[in-house]
Image 1: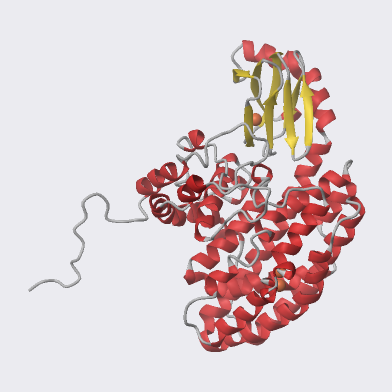
Image 2: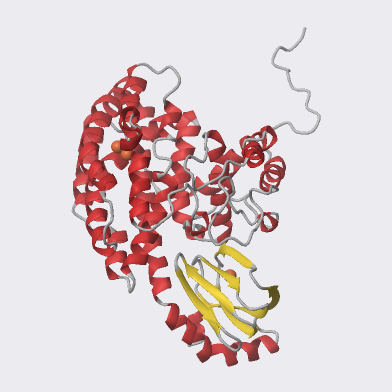
Length: 477
Ligand SMILES: [Fe+2]
Ligand SMILES: [Fe+2]
Ligand SMILES: [Fe+2]
């Protein structure tokens, strides 16, 4: 008798969630002209997203990141790779005169081998990036529909009364225009492809829940009118802020947390087991947007003169409907029909989306403070350099020297500990973050705060510089 469940006859792997396979898949996906380092400060090629692939093979994604590792370089790197992989699900074509259609890169972007690698790597990266949510967010107890409604109402009215950290950071910044632009960039990975993750649930067969969600999708897409499509409204906002509106032109300036939030919505729409989580997450997003957009618009209008805020105004208005529609036509019927599983997952998604949104605003606030402290950290170099160099000479501080030619760009990244950058000869443009640089000449340098996004561009024919790992700048001052 044959055992009819004895199916497998594997030649090289008996499990496609295998760590070694996933690692190979990540490296294969990233080994592409689309992802290698280039010297562009902003993405000039429509299909390219820099992943610093030569560093990827030294990173270990096998143990899920904990909440205190979320701002680490490994997490940033995993977020970038995962974001690039998710996008191979969506059709992206340059639509304006500003960008040429590169046929070769179009084929490379959607190459079947890369798509297959992405399919193998995505669950692994998702596990690495999002497992912390299980520890961070407890959804205990048994949830009934009345309890869910009461809880959501309570949390949302509490949140509506609180001030957004992003708007606080913009208003308090030394350069409110730059901070406002930076916030628009952080929203871009999500808003310029708005409704694309949601549209993953436009297909399938799940009764009137599908029809109800489709109603929201239609609005997001502007009811067939390109000019009123939400992503078009956001493109206009970017243009009016003197920013480029092409998706991912500012790829290098997305913060870890902005990518994490956008990847979360991709994760819960791509993996259909998370449909109920998505219902909770989208209910939170649609409702929180009503007051969030009002606060963002008010602050951004002040910081960026002439800003087109129709995107935000539209959401203050239409998300009142969307919030009500999602509650009546998705949250309620899902819990009535699918019971505990639906209720628990809906509460989980609601909490996760709220947590990640707040986290992103907090990270942004820290990044703006870091950019505003550029002069302070430039001077801090002068105060501590002699002591650091002496310790390095004694072998007590790790130091690495680089010699780079004119125009060489260090793609934006972050370090897990504080570092000191010192210029031995030549000139470097140190990029503190989007739109903020510090010119470093020979003998000068800067303290680099751990977890903060930064890059560097060589200005002189050659620049010789040393990076000292000082671990914690507070020990030195
Ligand atoms: Fe929208
Ligand atoms: Fe909406
Ligand atoms: Fe660096």
